Length: 365
Image (cartoon, rainbow, N blue to C red):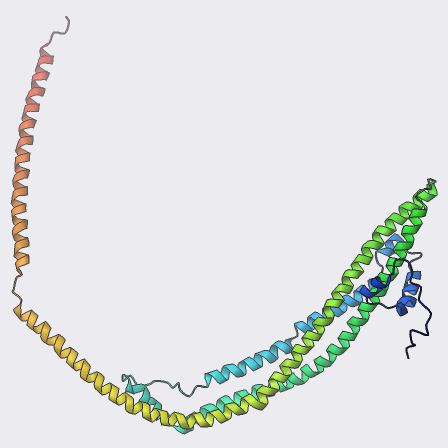
């Protein structure tokens, strides 16, 4: 039983631990007794031991964080979601409006095949799908029970992490108290210049640096624990929502599918008859239009072929132009050949005359 604050003497807060600091660490003045006990263990702490301050609490927090991560990745949640997704996929595939088209007749063929599908075949198709859905729902029911147990485990995990967060706060508070004491001791030794005082100041500096770093790490770990607490509740809420969603699917969705199938089966039979009659009329009109179009195309093509000459005038004109061009080109080539030969004769005569003159010239001037 807690006592009224009016009956308790005012609590004297130690140096370095104001009310705001305690509040930020999640502590209350009633926790000062535990803080003092932890602080007592820091009095003779060596620099090497300082690095391991709060290690047990940190190890526990790491273990809880790993356990939390395992819950996030737990296959039960994924498996349940996959089962529900499989139910949806099966329901979507159950479409009474789609049938295998075995006939190749245009327009009417698929409808005739649809009419040949018996009512018993459709019922059998739904029954097979219904068995799959029922099996899936039984599987999810088992997973739903496991999720219920997991939700209860989340409550225990929440308490464990909250306890670790509180322990981290106690260690941080005790560390801050020790840091303030070391700072005061170092300040008192500032004016001393003897070897013993210098050695002690060096030890205090080392301890301050290591302990301040360790307290900062513990603060980060406490903040990580703060983040883990809402995560646990969110994961727990997600699991509960998934359980609730599955219950709705089992109690509402699946029965609604079965009722809809019975209605859809009757309406589908009526719709098939109307579609068949309409398709026959459409096919009749389409055949008449196609025959008329084919008659027109055939008649026009026959008339054009009959009226066409054996050789087109354009072809004769092309042959005439090419003949004249061929004669002119050949004559031009002959004329060019004659000119080239005459030029060659002149060049040969000039070369002979040049050779004779050089042979007749005296050897010595």
